[in-house]
Image (cartoon, rainbow, N blue to C red; front, top):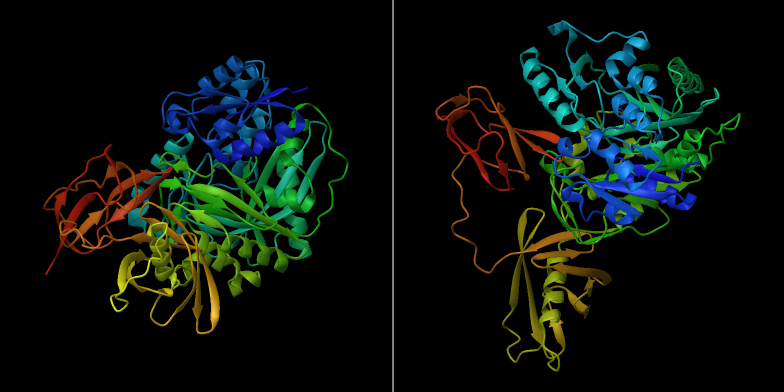
Length: 616
C-alpha cells in the first residue's frame, strides 16, 4: 500500500494531487525550484525538497534530482502530474529502478504513445516528410509533451524552416525534447477527446467524451463533458478507437485519446499518457476521483467491470494571467486577491499575495461548473467568473465570460477556429464609465481625517483624479459639500473606502473598491491611478518596439542588424516567457535603425527592443 507520494510537478496539479492524497491519508512530498520556494504547492505538502535553480531545465525536468528527492524524503511513490516529465519513459523507469512505485502507465506504453510520431505510426498514420505547396497549410508539432508548446501553423512554404526551428527550441525548453514533426492541418474542426482508465487486469474504461475546441495557440481554454452534438455513431466510434489504442500498448492508468472531428469523421491526433488539465469535467459527470483511481491502479487494484454512468454536464474554464487583446501576452506581478463565488470547483496553485513569475505556465486556476444540463452549467460558470474577485495582473476573465455566452458556443456550433473569427469582438473593451468616479470617491473617503466631515466651504471648486482604464485616460470629478460628496449627473447614495453606491438615472448601483498602491479594482474593472502631471520623459521614437512582457530574448532573426531593411510583419526576434516563445515582428516596412537587445538578455515590460524607421 502506498503511504507517501512525491509529486514531480508544481502549481495547480501538485495541489490537486495533494488534496486527494490527504483525503486518502497519504503523506505528501513536494519538489520546488528556487522561484517556487514559497509557492502554494510547496506550502501545501507535508514536506518539500529544493531543486536548485529556476528554469525548468535545471529543476522540474531533472529526473535524477527528483528521484533523489523522493528517496531523501522517504516517499514510496511518484505521481508525475502533467507536463514536464509526465510522459518521459526514461523518468518512469528511473523511478521504478529506484524501488519506488510509479503512479502512471508502464514505461513501454509511454514510450509507444508519448512520441506523437510513433503513436501515429501505431495507428497506421504517417507524418509528412517532403512538404510541398499542395500540402499547405500544415501543422508543425512537438513529438513530446503538449499544452500547445512547440506547435506552429504554417501557411507559406517559405516560413516552414523558421517555424520548425522555433518549434524545436520551444519544445526543448518545455519538455527537454526538441523532436518535431509535420502533419496536415485540418481547418476548423472540433477537438474531441476520450478519457480512458485502465487497470493491470485487462479492464479499460472509456469515460466518455470531452470537447476542447476553444483554444488559443493550440492550447485549450474551455473544455466540457460530455462533448455536445456528436452523433451516437461518432460517439461510439471515438470511444472504441480510444479503447483500441489503450489495448494496443497494454495501457494501465489514466490517459486521453484525442481526435479532430470534421465533416462527421474522426481524425486521430495523439494519445496523452497522463492526466489531462481538463480531467475535472470528467470527474464531475462520472462522480469519480481520477487521482484516487490512479493510486488504486498503481497499488494493483482492479477496476469494476463497468464504468459509472454519466450524470449531467460539466464545463471548465482556464483562468490565465494573460492579455488576449495583446496577442495573448503573459502577465506577471502580485496576485492580490483570487476569490470565485458560487457552487463551482476552483483548482489553483495560487493564493492571495502570491507572485506570478516568468518561468512557468500563466494558468492561474481552473474553474469548473457542474449542472443537470449544459445550458445550466454554462450559466453557472459564466456567472461565477463574472462575479469573481481577481485583483492583480491582467487575466482572460472577460474573454471567458463572453465566450461562455457567445451564441455560437451556447448552440454548440464551435470549432478550433472560434477565436480566429471572434477574438476582436470578444476582447473589445467595455469599461464601466462610473468606475473612475467610484474609485475617486472611495479614495476621498479613505483620505478624510477622523472628526472631519470632509466638506469644504467652496463647493464650486471640484476635485479631480485621473485614471487609466482599458488603455484610455479618464478623469473623475466630484465635490465636497456640507451634505457630503456629489458628482455631476450622479447622486452619491453612499461612499466609504470600500463601498460606493451611486444613483444613476434612478437605479442604485453598488461598487466594491479595493486598492493596492496605484492599482484600483472597482467590481471587475481594473484602474491605475495616474499622477497629476505626466512624465515628459516617457516618450519613444516612432517605430519603437517595446517588450510586451517580461522574458528572455532567445533568438534574433538571421542577418538582422542596424541598417537592414525589413518588411511589415517580418519576425525580428523571439521572447520566451512562461514556457512559450513569442514572436516580435516589424510594425512597418522600413529600416532597422536600432537593435537594443541580444540573445540571452532578460527584459522587463516596456523595455526598448528595436526601432524601425518607416520607409517614405
